[in-house]
Length: 196
Image 1 (cartoon, helix red, strand yellow):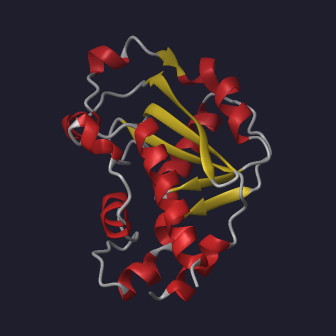
Image 2 (cartoon, rainbow, N blue to C red):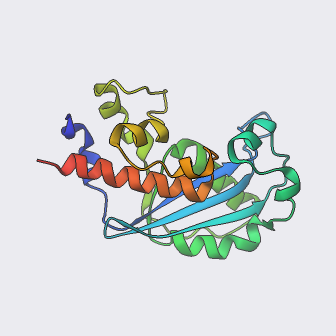
């Protein structure tokens, strides 16, 4: 229904990566939050081929609200490797890829802030696609709940009948599992847009 509103998803390449982050909190007067985990799911031929999660030691304290979302404490995060020590491995996944992010206006500036902060080289990419923004018109037409950013990953997961991977973790968010969830949702949306 309203599949013409999903046209942009049908134009996605068959190969791309999905990126997600869990952070120390929200942007505030001290700037963007720090990344605690960064998840990348590799999609090849419209199927999930690989998923990896990088745990990175933040410089800022993790807020109580953020801890309640992703379940990582400051004590645990203090044991993680630094962001810059893992960047070469992360960047390998980004080279010449289209990067799909659900809520790109949150995650992408935070990633770029880390790259700039540590003086790291940014690899060439094809671009960034926000699956949340791209789904707004369809979600509104379907009377799904939407914030100004668009429908949440949970909302689309339920509306499209996609398996809820977070159900296995008692609802705890993780960058790895959320990037997998977003990849499955994007492919289900694409199939809905392709359907005759």
